[in-house]
Image (cartoon, rainbow, N blue to C red; front, side, top):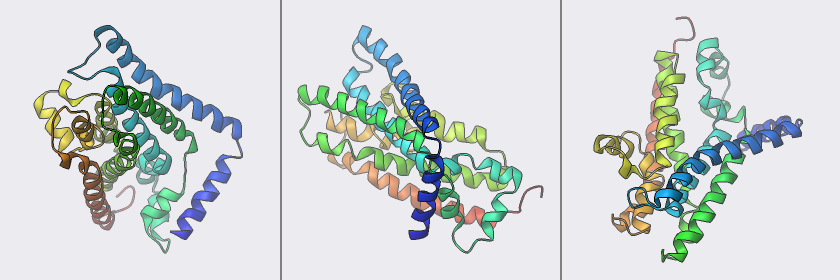
Length: 260
């Protein structure tokens, strides 16, 4: 881990050589993620509720999802673009290094520009939190909700590991990542009550993005569930990461290099 942090520090120093690029990227990612919520806020301004969720409650969902996805893209930038390692054969160079390939891969790029999405998410969480606390939400939510993006990052990282593992056989995985990561992330910014039952089951089980914010916040806001819902995000993150790491090691053993 000491070597991992040393390599990450080197990646940060390299990116900060272009400070204007970092500032522009940071601002753009913050604005892009904010636009998604503004569309929903416009609808809620007119109709006030979506399946019983008001604008402040949806802001919590959107803020948690945006922060988690931003953290994932900050730490997992290379994992998110893993297809080029398989297509170009660059993964072969990771195999000859005397330490885990995943650690090498993740240390190659620390995308600080994605922290703009994290900052925008934190702002949304703060705005939404003020609204729900004024409406009578439990005071402990003011601490708990800021921990949810950490668990959410674990869930998204596990999904990314699973799709990257599929690449050892499929090679081309960009479209699979859109299905397994991009679409579920977008869905997690809304109350899952708006989706059909089979899709809710999918986002709770196979692609557990509902555990990132919807399940615990539904209980915290008095919309259903039990107290166990508060532990669900962290249990899901831990379990899914263990599964994802196991899949990665299994896929790595079956890697046959590019062009085979």
